[in-house]
Length: 386
Image (tube, rainbow, N blue to C red):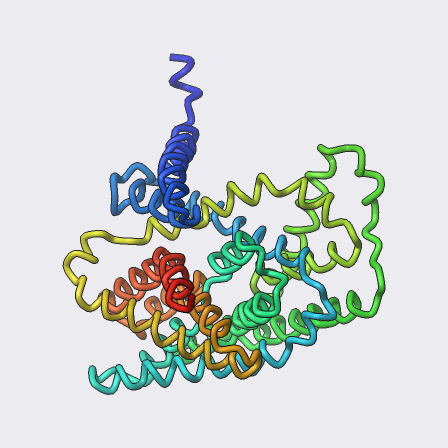
C-alpha cells in the first residue's frame, strides 16, 4: 500500500517515452535518419491519437517549451555577432518576401475554393513560418550552423520569431478583436531593449558575466547559474509579450561574447537533449491518424504543395543573397516545413472564429506532418542535387 500511495504515474510515463525513443532511435540510426523523427513518432504512438498512454498532454507540452528555449540558447552561444549583424538584409528582406510569397500562393489556392480574405491571410502566415527546432537541430548535426548558408537560414528563422508578434496582433484584428494598446507598447519596448542589448554586446570586445569564475570548480552551482542566465532572459522577453525563445537566443549571444560557452554547454547539454525530445514528442501527439486516413488525399496534396512552394520561394531568396543555386535549393528544402510557432497562430485563428473546426484540424495535421517528414525531404533534395 505504501508503494502504491507514493507511486507517481508521470514517472512511468517518462520511462515509457524513454524506452520508445531508444527503440525507434536505434532503428532510425541504422537507416541514418535523425532522432527528431523518433521523437515525433513516439508522440504519435503514445499520444491521445495512438495508444492513449500519454493523457497529461499539458505536462509534455509545457516541458517541451523548455526544449525550444534551450535550442535557441545553444545556437546563440555559437553565433558570431559581427557576422550575424552583416546578415540583416537576408533576415529582413528574405523573411518579408517569404511571407508575401506564401500569402500569394495561398491566395491562388483560395481563389479556386472560394476562401475569405481573412482565412487566406491566416493560412499564408501559417505556411510562411519555418521550424527553428527542426532546422537548427539538423544544422548542428551536420555541423553547418556556422557556414554562410547556415547563418543566412538562422537569421531568417530569428526574424520569423520576431514577426510572430505582429501576425498574432493581425489575427486578433481579423477575428474582430482589438489588442490592448498597452500590450502593443510593451512589445515595442521589449523589442527596443533586445536591440540595445545586442548593440551593447556588439560594441564590447568581451563581456564579463558576474560570478562566472566563482562557479568554475563547482558543477552543481554551475548548472543552476546556467539555468538562471538561459531562462532568466526567456522570462524577461516573455513578460514583454515577445517570444521566450528569442530571449534565450540573446542570452546565448551574451554567453558567447563572455567566452563562457564551454561552462554553459557542459552544464545544460543533457537537459537540452531531454527537453528537445519532449518538444518533438508533443508535436507527434497532435497527429490524428484517423483524420489522416479519412482526408489523406487533401492532406497529401497540402503537404506536397507546402514543401514545393516553400522550397522554391526560399531557394530564390537565398540564391539572390548567396549566388549559389545548389546551396540555395538545399537551404530552401531546409526551410520548407511549417514551423512550431504556426500552432500558436492556428489556435488563435480557431478561437477567433476565423477558421472552422475542419480547417483547424487540417492545418494542425498538415503542420505536424511537414515537421515529421522534413528530414526525408531535405535528404531527398540533397540526393537530387548530388
